Length: 127
Image (cartoon, rainbow, N blue to C red; front, side, top):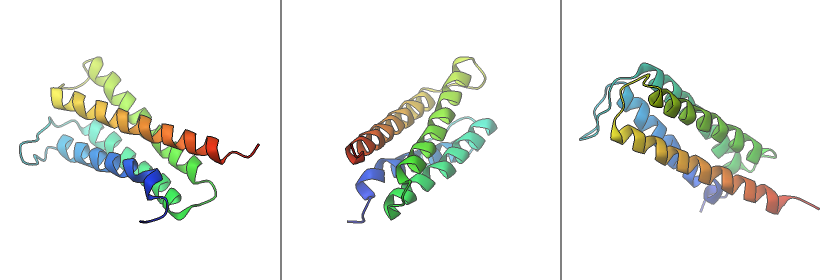
């Protein structure tokens, strides 16, 4: 197994989900999956998908500040998901049940990643 994989694997799922959402909101149907075109969502989801790999690579390479890089990437993604959820709640775009589900899954994966990172930093702390 690749070193650092266990600490970053759920980030890869989230990257895939953000890319899937960006493609969907760009108007590309993938099989039975189709979402309305929402250009701001494409931009935000693409930025989140770009931010997350930096932390994952840092963890895989065991860089000195890998936890910080991964945390920042996940906080960027968290801000993007929160922005999307608030925008939809305020009626800023068309809302679908599948889109609400995507947001909840992304939120759960981000929360799990942040929890793992925080627990990891606690166990690595020197007293």
